[in-house]
Image 1 (cartoon, one colour):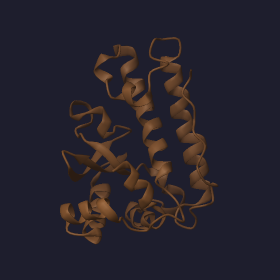
Image 2 (spheres, rainbow, N blue to C red; image 1 turned 120 degrees about the vertical axis):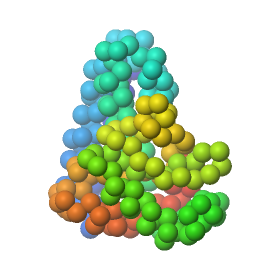
Image 3 (cartoon, helix red, strand yellow; image 1 turned 90 degrees about the vertical axis):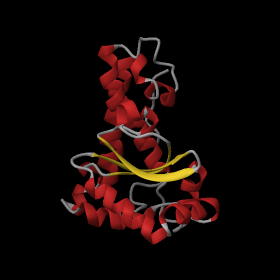
Length: 203
């Protein structure tokens, strides 16, 4: 069965003014849809078309050479965006609590210190990519990946590893219509629309 574009879990204007309606429509209906379409072009008609997405992108080394690149880029883009939409909400918890809150405090010294380090990591990513909070061996770490790579792909491919808990898209298409070249302003604004209850489920 072909991979499918998941609907946004909220209206495209739900995150305004922090993320505008036009950006959400271009981002979801344009960019994310293109990743899904191109992933299907790469795998439909092969034994890979029914493989769960996480398993597909988590074992890139086993893929044929002519499919590996398209799956890495488009499968990664599909997974990353599907993950991203679920942790955004205008009405979710505004700060991590419980076990996640405790882990962030233990790992980074507090929520404000975590946000500062996360923003710095997102700003330091040259070109396109993602900033991530990952869990590994019971510890939290902030990392970043290029393009549509993610930690599920493993260190040999993406340069990082661990279970993704939280991630933010820092490609220009995620913010340019509203923030132009001000990635830092976007990274500060996005805290207003993170649903920390949803993030806690990933943890």
